[in-house]
Structure formats: structure tokens, C-alpha cells
Amino acid sequence: MEYTHLGRTGLQVSRLCLGTMTFGRECDAAASRQLLDRFVAAGGNFIDTANAYSGGRSEEIVGDWLATQARADLVIATKVRFGPDLNNRGLSRKHILDAAENSLRRLKTDFIDLYQVHMWDAFTPLEETFRTLDDLARSGKVRYVGVSNFSGWQLQKAIDLCRAEGWEPVTCLQPLYNLLDREAEWELVPVCLTEGLGIIPYSPLRGGWLTGKFRRGQPAPAEDTRIQVAGPASLTWNEDWPNYDHPATWQVIDALIEVAQAAGRSPAQVALNWLLQRPGVTAPILGARTLAQLEDNLGALGWTLSREHLARLDAASARRLPYPYALLDDLIRA
Image 1: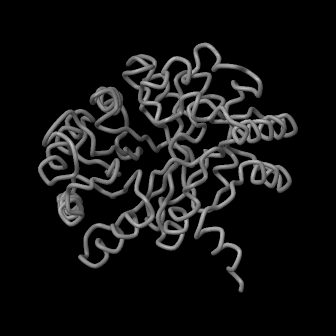
Image 2: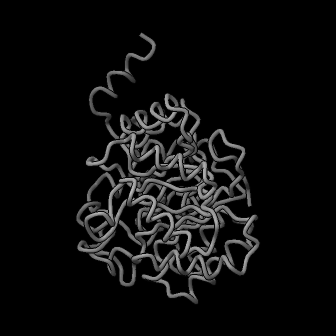
Image 3: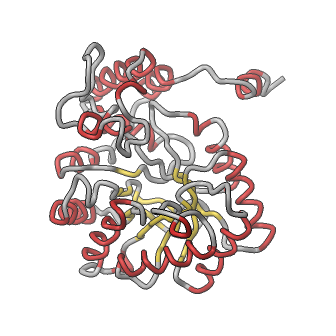
């Protein structure tokens, strides 16, 4: 396992993070513990969950396992934002404080290493949200603060607010980022690089699209894949077949398979290795459903794609930039 610092902090995390959205959903408690055990045995110390995953069941599974581990050796991240109704959702002071206590109880721990805002809340003042997170950090119940699913201006505004008020700073961003979804590079990645935030991308294999299971010309997702099992009505974050069954996707997948064959690696390992080499990326979040998937994903470390292979993947996944990004890019040295 390789390690790095989370942004500008002194916190050291493994270069791969184990995501637990499958816990309590595709994976029962026993299967989830196997994944956790294998990840830690491989040297992983960074585990990400959320209070919304399986209605809190994911946190419970992680907590039952965590009670048998050396707590100080692990970096546990969770999130707050979503919930069933009224004051059980959003980023109000009430909900954040209630959710934090519930997460601590389910995780069976006295503190959360990384507490992340799961998504922007348009109905709660930003000052209310980040003052509350600062209070949690000052109390010792939260060690670091992060955000997920923010736009560029929202992220910069949160950073500037915390700096101006002397509150606990935003440490990292958890964005959607992979070979098929590179929009984070337009504003989010530059903000993170400028401000020293770590980047922990979720869905680095886009729900299976970048694993080699899908090939150009097939009319539908293969059996027993996440896309096929979940379907468009579930929490697949728009990963469903119609959203990606188009020429741009198959261009990326063709290049991915070509590079994987040339490098002697699996497509998933190549996709993860490409992401690990992107500027600012700290640790892609793995979403394995089985031990076999996790084993394959762990093979993304310990080697590096060649310059030629990186260039091939960059070119295949590049998109025409919209305004003003194309203009700014064209005239950067004008």
C-alpha cells in the first residue's frame, strides 16, 4: 500500500479508500467484514461511509467491525446531509448535531476523523452549517471537515468563509471523477490545487462502466452487473445504461481495453491508475461488491502507466470544453 497526506494536513491516508455504500445493500454484514478485513490486511487505513447509506446500516456494519480494530490506526470518514424528512435532512445546526451523534453511536467511536457535507444545501445559510462543523471540531468529536458534490463557486465560498471566520478549514473534496466524467477538472480540481485540498474521487469506475464488463456493440448491460441489477430507478447516480450508451463512452472504453491489454493489467486497474496520477488526487474511493473486485482494484497500486498510455487515455476521454473554459484554455498565454 502507498500513503499520502490528505491535502495540506498532516493526516496520512492510504492511496486507495474503501467505500462502503454497498454495505447493507449489495453486501450483508459478513461479506462487508470480509472486504474490510482484506482492505486493512493490504495496508489500507482510509474508510468512507455516510449516514444515508442503507439508512445508517452501513455505519452500523463499519462500527461493529471497528470495535474489534485498533481505532487509532484507521481514518474513518462519514457524511451528513440526506435523510427522510423535515429536520432529519439538510445542513441545519439541528440536523448536523443530531446526525453526528447518531453516526458516532452507529460507528461505536468517540470521534469522526473526517466529517463531510454530502451535498450543498440551498435552504440553510452557509454560516450556520460551517459554524456547527467548527463547533464539532472544537469539541473533539470531529477531526477534519470535508465536502462532497459542491460546484466550484460553492466550494470556494465555503473555503473563504471558514478562513475569514477562523473556523475549521475545508480539508478535502469528494467529487464524481473518472475517465468518463472529467468535468471536475474545469473548476473543482483547480480550486483544490490552489487551496491545498485533497481530492478523494467517488465512483472511479463509474459503477462498473470502466471494468471491461461492457463492450462496444452490446445492446444492454451484462447480467449481474451493478448497472443491470440496480436499474435507472435506484441510487446509481445516473450510471444507468441510457446515460452512457453513446459514442463518447465507447471511445473511452475502447482505449481503456487497448491500454489494459498492452500494459498487462485489468481495465479497472488501468482506470484507477490513471486517476491516481491526476493532479491533486489523494485516494480514489473503491466501491467493491465482492472480494474478487477488491483484489483486482488493489492491483492498481505498485506500478505506473507509461507516458504513452496516459496520453492515449487522456485523448480518448477529452471533451470539447464549453465557454468560458475553452476560451481561457486557448488564451492562457496570450
